[in-house]
Image (cartoon, rainbow, N blue to C red; front, side, top):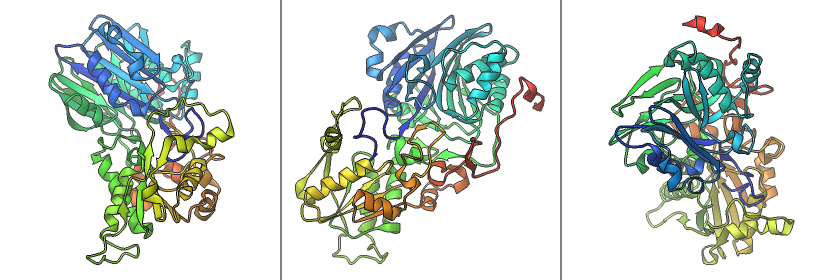
Length: 503
C-alpha cells in the first residue's frame, strides 16, 4: 500500500479488520493448530489475538492485545484444553482499541457457552444493541461482535442451533464471516452476500474453517471449498466431517474486490481464485488499458509486486498502443528498484514534519543504478491520501529518474468502506474530490492511470453486481445511512422474535 504506511505510526493506511479460524479435531488439543493458523492470518489483524477452546466440560480462553507471537507462550497454550476451538486476530474498525473488543468474544448463559470471532462490520449493530439492552442484556463493549453473541444466545434459549443461527442472520445486516464455538461444537457462518471470505479445509485429524486458505496450508491441510454466502457449516465433533445448511440465499453476492487487490495473502485462494494470479492478471489489464513505454517498471514492495510482474509480462507481448511487438523488442524491463526496510514497523514514531517526510526513505530505499537516467513506471495497488505517493515520486526523481509514471492496479478510492476495512474518510481520500489529472499534478508524476472497474470485474470473472465496489463507486450493497446503494436492499426490521414466523 503506497499511502498511510509512512506518515503516522498507527493505522493510517487501509487495514483489514480481522482474521478468523475454527477447528474441530479428533484426538489432540486444538490450541496449537489454532496458534499456527493465526500466525498465517497475522496480516489481517495486528491489534489483538485470542483463542477460545472447549474440552467437552468447560470453555478456556486466552485473549490479549498484541501480535500472535507476543500474546501466546507455551504455558498459555498448555492450558487451552480441548479438541475444538476458535481463534481471532483483529484490527478495530467498529469498537474501541482496547481489550474489551478483543476477540474471540466469550459469553456463558443458561444453554451453555459461546465464543465468537467476527470478520466484517454490521450496519445495524446499534439498533440491535439498543433493543437487547431494553430487554435486560448488559454489554461490556461497544463492538458489534458482542451484539451478535447476545442475539444468538437469546435465540439459543428457545431453539436448536441451526434455527437460532438462522434467526440471528435474519436480524443482522452487514458483512460478516464468523467462527463460533457453542460448547465443543464449531460453526462457520458467512453473510448472505459473501462480502468477507471464509473457507473450509480438511486436516489429517479434523476440519478447519479460516478466513484464508493460507491458514489451511500452514497446517498441511487441503482446501475443500469456500463457505457459500448465507451458509452455516457445522464441524462434526469427532473431526470426521461437516454438515452444511444453506440458511439464506440472495440473487447477487457482494464479494469484496479489495481482498484480491490487497488484503489477502498472494498464496491464498479466495472464492476459487488464487490471489497471486488475480493480481498478475490485473497487472496485465493495467498494461492493456494504460501502458506507457518506459525503460523500467518496478513495484512498490510488497503490494505492487504481482501487479508489476503481470504488467511487465503483458508489455513483452504488445506495445502500449496494443500492437504486437517485434521479435527483437523485449518491451519494458521489470526490476526491483525499491528495497523495503522490514524493521521499520507500525510503532515507529515520527513527531515532527521533517521526520514524517523522511518516513518513505526509511521504509523504501531506491537502487540508484536501476533508476538513474531512466524513465520509470512504478506500480502499486492504490493511492489513499496521496501524501506518501508524493514523497515516493520525489524520491525517484531525486535518485535521477528522467520521468516517473504511476500506475495503480485498482480503481480510484472515492468513498469510505463500511464493511470491515479501516479506510480514510471522504475528506481524507484524495480521489474523492480530485480528477486523475489533478492527483497526477499533486503527486508530481509525469503520468498517472488507474485500472477500470470493468477490468476488475473481468479479471475476477464476476458481474459487477456480484462485487462490493462501494469504495470506488460510492454505491454500496448494504443499506447504509446517508449512502447510495447499487441494488434493491433494505436492512431488516427489528422487533424481537417476529421474524420467526417466516419459517
